[in-house]
Length: 120
Image (cartoon, rainbow, N blue to C red; front, side, top):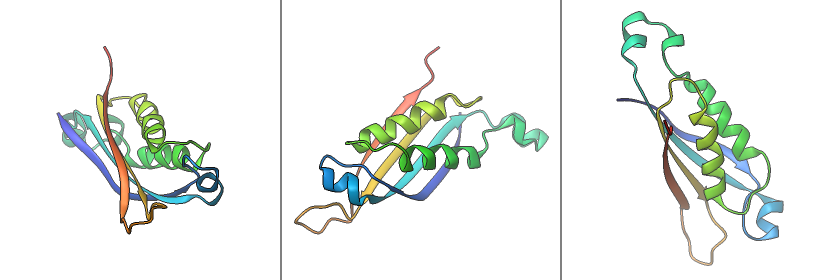
């Protein structure tokens, strides 16, 4: 199985447990790994035989900047479920990090990483 990656996508979203977080918003950083078979795409040099990473970016941006959610776990799940619907995707790993979270301590980011696969 081969892997197509998107690393360090920055999106502004309005997610958090507190109402204040959902009003002010946060910058989110997102990584996506898609497992697929790239052999045919590599041999034919044809994007139709692969997974277009620009589609992955669009999906993640739409979900992360869309409807307000309380948990970044829900953001990650929303991204994963839409990515799994893309043709040729067999598995996906989504990591969502909230940068500069509203904590008393100084923390660069907090996040979640989920792995999902197509159920046969």
